[in-house]
Length: 122
Length: 165
Image (cartoon, rainbow over all chains, first blue to last red; front, top):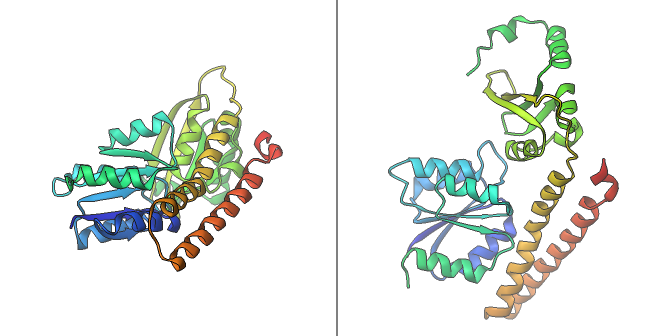
């Protein structure tokens, strides 16, 4: 089973993602970038569902950039899931190397199908 | 990293005077990445008051600057206790601060999208997934809490008096 790391400070969003993804993926969760980095040291995920605005020194953009600049991590599929809906926000996400960009509110089913397809689980 | 020897050698009252009289707008970011202070020039240049800016993340801060007539903005990392970075900025000659309503509305939209995402998500799960009775009850209860949260946020964020401030 592919590993997916959910990084979001909102417990309800983590719960929704967990409910829809738990049958198809091995899940882990983090509430901010610092704990996400710790989780990634324990187990490199195949994909990250990543919020942008979170408490702490680093935000989602910075984590994505860090991942994509590290040859050992660059192949992790980064899916942004964020309330930042402006075109400039999305452009910044793509510039940081994001593989997908979902804006809240979102369809959990669509996100699940997207991840399944992206990780070639069909 | 900026050389902090100069700062250390200046008495607090001199630093205070520089902060208040600087021709540059200055914003201070703490170690947790939040705005903790802006100087009077910053308020005049941008139309953003210190009360509004306090507690913004650097991302919020940069987003807000987009709607201001800032011409130059420089970020400097500092090693002063409790501080992580300082922003220095200047405005275009002759420019006046724009009304920051657009920025506020964008911020409000982002705040409201969070509970809306939960409402959308839990509703879709309840409609499409086969959960036992207890799980359905729990999810419905959480859904209701999110509706209440959203209602409170609307009352709080969409107060016209606050938006027009």
